[in-house]
Image (tube, rainbow, N blue to C red; front, side, top):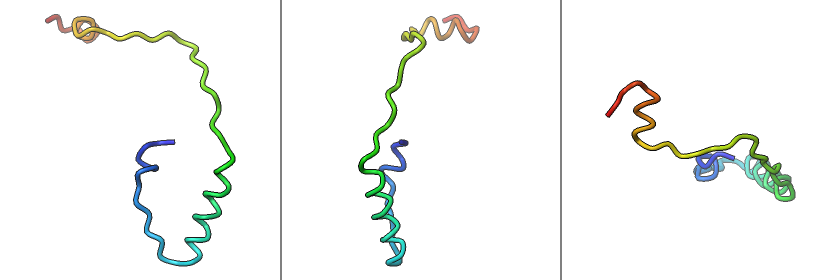
Length: 58
């Protein structure tokens, strides 16, 4: 889930909207996300390596 959607302000203007929000929250409460399996290795690049990747030597 994106962080922006968690931090978003919600303005409820009608009882029907409130009911839908409560229903959605209750439906989502028992669900969890899938486990993520890393398939590739990752490493941090130094500033020198980044300049080299983009063709600019420092």
